[in-house]
Length: 471
Image (tube, rainbow, N blue to C red; front, side, top):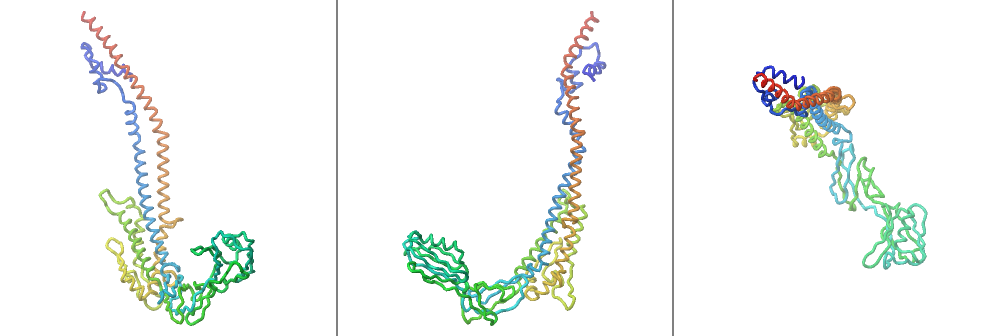
């Protein structure tokens, strides 16, 4: 409708014999004394109304993002718990960890590999392995020229090597030459208040690494230490070792010889490392409680409703499975066990499904019935409680076909579809509509801007007509 047409409608209801008040007409037609349209505001308002479907899609997308975030957190919780279960089921895990106690840790200590056979052993350290070494006479400094001459180093194995000086070499030069000859020794310059000396030390301990220096007149070499093997007995058997770290004598056990104490027995006890088991069980309880806590949150009304996954059947199934997993009972194929369930390990369930651990009960079970504890978690062939829990969790967290992977894939697919819908809606509808509205409102604005002059012209014409009639 043109501005004139719009005014015609207003004027048709106006007494033609009365003077037309332009401001009154504008106020009646447009609610303001000054005609005009805020084009930007008008277009924005229309677009906002048109975007109602898109806002619904964005709300759906936001809900899905919240669900994905919550599901990722629960998947992380479940993965941590599954890692705990796998560790408790591992042949190299905490239940296989061993420790060695020494009756005299000043003489000998030891470590044991996972799965080593428990037992007691007696060690006597008669002498330690030593490292062969030679030192030269004293010179003024490391940069002092050595006398012309030569000396020969004969390693424990290999061919002798002769070092020759012509009177221009220093101790540092000779040390560098020795170190470059790969003789199984290391040369260095030692300096103190009395001057500098060349020290040559075997790279390893034992008699096989012993070496000699000959023909050293003018250098003053003397042997500081002879390389010898360690001498010890283990459970009454004589042992000679080139190193003070002795492996292989007791299967899985490595001895560290620290000092000699001939004729004195040192007792070594190889036992399960219960401290590692306690830590592993504590971690299991902690991670279980974290998972249950996050699952419970989904079904708790915090005032703004339940969690984003309250209606997710996968999450509900996980909660049911992990709670029922605690009902596991171990039954030995023969005989009896003191550890048939988690309760016998001091693990109890609280009202909210979380667990509490009595470390005293757990420690007692480990000290008095370690094999029963191990059988509960690992069974006779890694098929105990830990494996059972691992299998249940794997159905959810498997990256290939786990329930979480399927859920997350579906949610991400929905988000992708929504984003496509939003993009298409913007491109195919909103953007063209915005362009059209901009044009229409702009044209209307131009018409309104012309309206006052048109109204003035009409008013003048009507006024002239009235004057003619009156005359």
